[in-house]
Image (cartoon, rainbow, N blue to C red; front, side, top):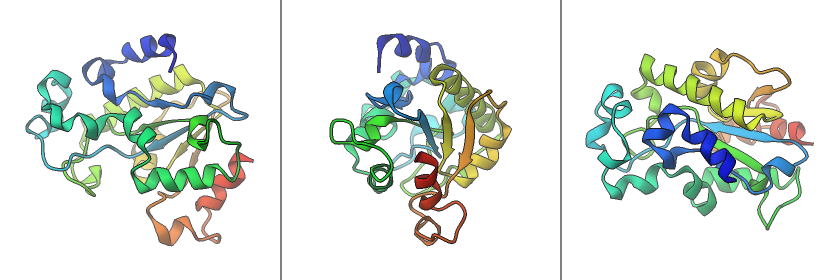
Length: 207
């Protein structure tokens, strides 16, 4: 990520408090044939954090209030670069079918963030079990700012809940296309070519 974009992201309210949650920007994002911003649901902690007892507590806290053992769980850049999560391995597999790899990774051609800016409290939990009006509001505000900065050609949501609660509520930016693709972990739909929002839809969009 260039310093210029780091500075712009630093001006987003939520990233002032939690800078390690800033989006992952692939090295080749701005040179890619199509600029793609992929938006998932949320990060998650392995177990509940004391500052994530509720939305007000979370959004009025900052990184200095969070125990260092939790940092890796919300470090977007590190999580995508490690590709340890099966979601990113599956995305890498699909992206590589439609675009050339850059430095051996198709993911280096895209940008990635989560729509919800508050993590779920345990592994495998959906933020929809916790989400409030404040989560929706801050998610919409943050995503809007990121889109304005990155100016993608496509914004692709890979979480139906995030699409419904954030994606559909966004003030759409001109010349940006917004799409919903089913979550890669939803095997029943992701691999089903008859399903309109499967991985095959993503492959077609990227051609």
